[in-house]
Length: 338
Image 1 (tube, one colour):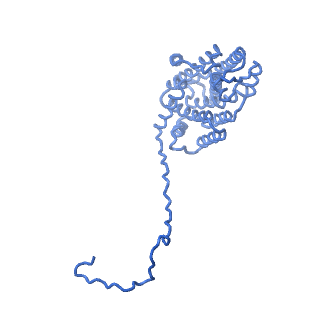
Image 2 (cartoon, rainbow, N blue to C red):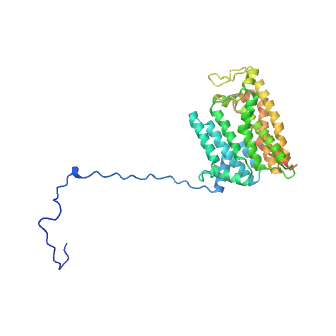
Image 3 (cartoon, rainbow, N blue to C red):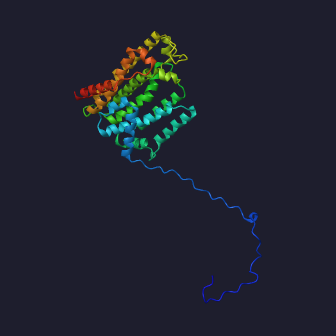
């Protein structure tokens, strides 16, 4: 539209420039595809208090025996042990997961890489809490690599020829946790100081870890065997005339009396490790004593139940009632008060 009063420009007969040709669909160039950016998930940093609460929830839901012990600690130490347990639980879960062996071994190595990283993944609550624990307490995080090595042996289907081989495995997967826990507990004010005392305490913590793991081996004997894992030494199986073979229903084919003698023999050995490991108790402060004594008491009572009725252990996992666990915790508190 021309504005009122304006003189329109003349329209030329032939517009300047090249001649125009009709536009056909074939002459229109194809549009260039524009890449659509893929949204990158935002990894939100987890605050340290939230990370610890996550680890404490893992303990409450996945480790009832452990939870009875650590609830007796002061909050900072309870949070620290929860972080240690949560990472250990992660390693165990990788080892126990279904799936290809190579994938699980790769996942274990990824966990090792995360442990070694100078800075933890800020969105991983377990690593955030674990690194904060290492700042607050002298915990040897490299001991977790022994746990990873032990779980890698599990995944690869390792078997143990001698009792010494089995103890070496127990040191990796449980003795390492004992030494890590000692870093949180620390020594009591009245305990001897110096490298000698620390080395002795570490050796005793290691022994207690071995005792707990040997108890787990006997408690989970059938469950592990159904999953294709055998921990009892080949030398001991041969000595008692056992194979741990299963029939079509998943029951052991060995004569029950032979299996009972085998289990009682292994339980007796585990009791020896408890006797050594409990010498750690006088070296700890009162609340750490209560925590350690409660956990050891629960597992030692579990071991006694297995030894008293091996047939029940062979049929399934033996456990204690919440009342029995509470009684052990009460005994530990009373003993610590003395």
